[in-house]
Image (tube, rainbow, N blue to C red; front, side, top):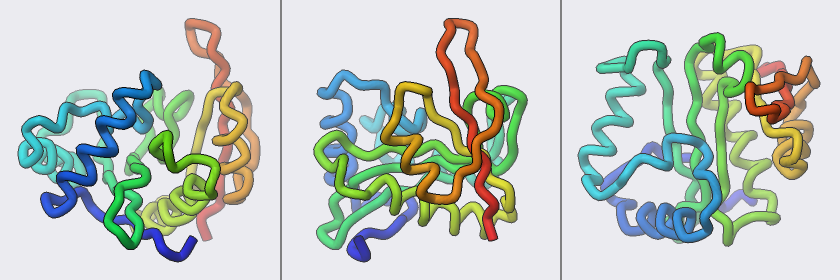
Length: 174
């Protein structure tokens, strides 16, 4: 698992990212984290928007500054993505957390999610986030295991308006 690393979104990985994006779209699954649902047809524009978001430039009202990273292997294949929110709004506190992450469908069940969250915690620490909230839907057993493997301690569940149960976990980032 040492053959993967987090990188900032970059032009040099355009084809690899488009492959990642297309595979996820074709799967029909919800795109997680939300940031990967951004249309990459204007790739440079998307990169600029992600960079601005991290710098706090043109952040939408009610949103927070965030950092996005891609999990890549030694062949530059984009295996996953993570979005780290620098602060929590009420919504993020209840149902979004500091860190949202996802692994492309063809790369799942190989330990990449656990490694992605581990590496994300290092980035969160650099941002001064010492108590990290990570959440998952109650029916996402794989994500729940990933969070627990990375030190997640359960907090009170949150029930969304549609009845979906969000499991909330805190990780001490030391």
